[in-house]
Length: 323
Image (spheres, rainbow, N blue to C red):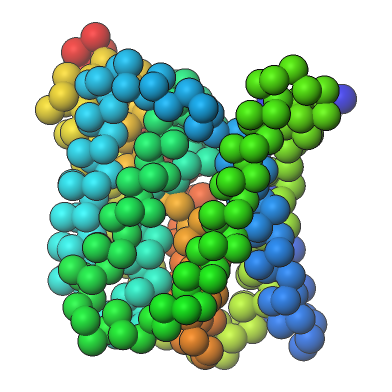
């Protein structure tokens, strides 16, 4: 019988299968763009289910392991932005494509990175405890990063009203509902506990469904004009190779132990594509389709590299790291 743990451990295989199916459907069916209408509601429910699994009510827990906390923030919000700045300088992009690249590479993952850290023999519990802080920091810093990297003219492409609406409906509301659910479950409310328990089953199937509707609806456009996507693949591959090393460097600076160092490497190498995707879709058409496709491309590259990370990061971060 399938339980939640098995579902989470097999999620990479599930996503790869769904990616292949979605490409086949998207290329074989001329009306596959109809799935586009399902993207936002599915992502809204997905984010609610993900936020329910994040212990926002236990924020103090993240501060107990101060060296890990410092390494995680320094790696994700200082070293990674420097790496991204270097990459976009080496691989120049047009303004619209740059928005997609920056949205996804500047935001650390807050969901399946926990499972990857566990599979890679890292300190997944500390990652879980730190997810509220990662979420809050990236939402606060992302507008500043975009302004710094893109400048006023390019940021002007982003219409503020739909962007704010997408952020409110697809991030703020699911976030608030998840906090309410956690509060109710803490008060020994049977319904609240049942909802919280049921939400734990949702992230993997809903993430797979999100991959399907996004890729199936966009792959036709990419097939007809693959040039923009091909320009970002070198950036994503280079990032995927270097990012875990920046995590290891940050862990070394703050003298994090072996298991914490592995977790920091997973965090710096894993990005928050599905949380920023709604923000990309809120951009004016037709730019929003290109930005969304750029973000989804990073997810595909990342999933393939996670299979490598699981084997390589434990070897890369060995007993020589300070225990």
